[in-house]
Image (cartoon, rainbow, N blue to C red):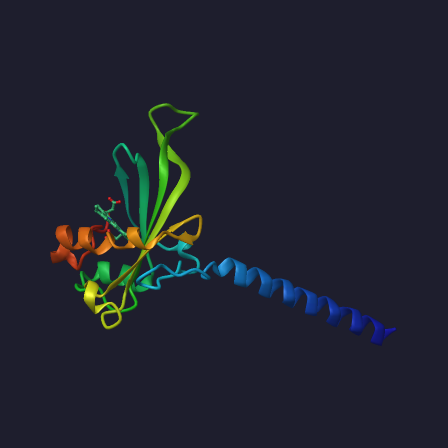
Length: 169
Ligand code: HEC
């Protein structure tokens, strides 16, 4: 009786372990890397601290939020420039829609893109130390889109380590 119970338990544990692995590899969502840079969506970025929100006017009409990993937050707090290797910044974006419950309020509609910048000063020496990734529904955008990233960041915010976003007060 006891043995039978033990066997049933270990089978249950094995199944639970298998399920957990399945969920983890799916959850990690890191299968696909961006062209040119090989940047992947970081795990758990959705729970990272907020650096600042932003709004983009028409035609894109988006609400955005830039979040960062621990290194990014510390660098902002200490005003460290350039950002240290290992810094990761993620920009989430949604269509900007009117609240159905309260007209003057804007709320996030469908998600559009998730964009990532990873600091690795050796690997990405040619692009200011930053690797770029743009993802739509978890899949990286094409190479042509990735060719635009550094040029714009370099033209506008070279003096802030190629990063637009300042920490919102
Ligand atoms: C035409 C200009 C332009 C291009 C091209 C561009 N960005 Fe940006 N990016 C911005 C601006 C402006 C912000 C500031 C936040 C905002 O307004 O959304 C920003 C913010 C970001 C951020 C948050 C960190 C920061 O610098 O504020 C990430 C991550 C990012 N962009 C990634 C990318 C990636 C990846 C690409 C290429 C696929 C890209 N960007 C192409 C203008 C650009």
